[in-house]
Image 1 (cartoon, rainbow over the protein chains, first blue to last red):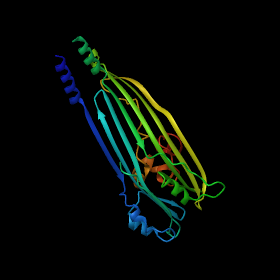
Image 2: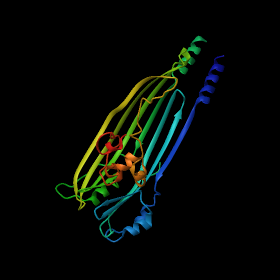
Image 3: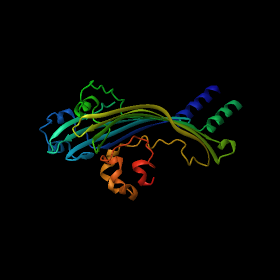
Image 4: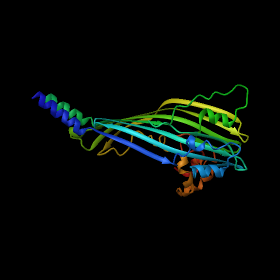
Length: 119
Length: 195
């Protein structure tokens, strides 16, 4: 009788248990890897070079005659445990990004890139 | 038998405990500034990488890096088995931990100020007795875990009218300063958006 109850409880627990997986990606394609940007030279490369290499940015920022191009890729990954009585969800969001500054002659003055390692 | 039935009833009455964990970004590196020397934008970008937020300002650029960890705990009780199936009880709490680094640069790209803040606070919570369903959330985290504003930049003039009219002061535009997550929209630069 006890074994039967135990098995019934276990079956109930398994039937009522669940899991969830979540993945969400927003932004521009990550094209600013080291292999792609190594040819960019501060003081020589132009805004046209960067746009040709990386495509349209997420945002354009203007300061007087200067401009900055900002590229952003946002990636959220989540996983969850659903046990009806107890549920737990964990979501990690990382931001791959790149920024390029240009002077009033559209020449690249500074830039930085960051790509987070995939788990 | 009675014991088992009571245990089952208790499990059904205590309907659920739910925990959410949000981790946004990576922990910030320490900004080591060389003593008594001018620091340029290029050096800061090498130390910290591209910022999460950036805006032009009258005097130059404002850059911000951030890391957030948000915890949300919610506990819900249903009184259905006690004969009160028209009523539910909800209890919730939220905690936010994070760091924010703000750096401003003049038009010559020289660092003009740095400010860093860290926090580990209770961000709110509540209790509710509600009829039939949980109509009202007792924990609100939407304004802390949303997407970065750069994704909406191109559509800034396609928002509903009060927000489109406020485009000249919108902190998401990248030309008018920036704001941290969770900044109340009813005051300051967003007050014209009539939230």
